[in-house]
Length: 343
Ligand code: SER
Image (cartoon, rainbow, N blue to C red):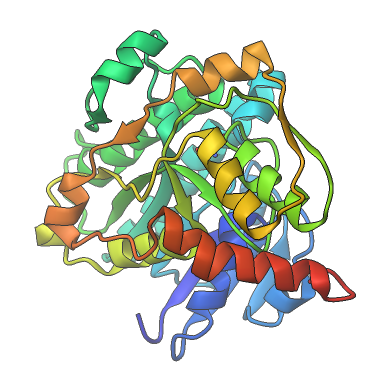
């Protein structure tokens, strides 16, 4: 993606941090970062411009789009599932209205300029809603179109925005008399729980895995809010970034869908603890399930079928469970907490 202008919303979040580091290594790429909060300095230095603002503020978006001709938008800003459950109307505003605002300015710019703008959107395993544990265990790897009756605000928001994206890509203003050339090229990934060595997520329900790791590395006890046998898919952050960049650079004619599952590994919470304990022998994790958060995780799939992503654009995770911990998470998290600044 050389010489591109890229907008990253939610730039200060978990994925934003990882993504900006990779994007900044690409020649001539101009990164414009948007977030409610100022970016960490290390990330800020890699950006052409940082804007502190809200995706709900149309004035901010219009000013941004009149100053830059964006080639690609990575729309990462969102309230995660636990936080969204505590503030459903706010989640709907940020997750749905915010996405709609961005799609609208993107399609307006693309139609004015008669060109495509790519819109890369991270969705989530939270779009799924398995009715009970039995069914979850029997269901195996879940395909994109199965079991999409989410029980969370966040999951419903994500599912609807996937549909919005498909609409903006294919049917936007379909009754217009004149056919306009530009359009939004909407591409979406359904991520599993993500685990980063550099940042902790805020407000997610898959957070028990990264929290267990970061606590162990700091020698702090951790009370895990799900049962030991709880199983959902996870992915190491470098693979999440690779997935976003690979989907972005895939030839459009290869894409048979707007929405793709991506998987990597799916350990139980107990297996995660076991692996962490091999590296941090004193790691003190207790399992004290929170029945309500447990019910959410139990409604998420134990595994996802990502064969469409593998077939269409060559998805292949580099990190399985063992490699993620041995070669990425444990070394990086150890360095992070050994350094005096904790960076
Ligand atoms: N990590 C997200 C959450 O827990 C789910 O994709 O909300």
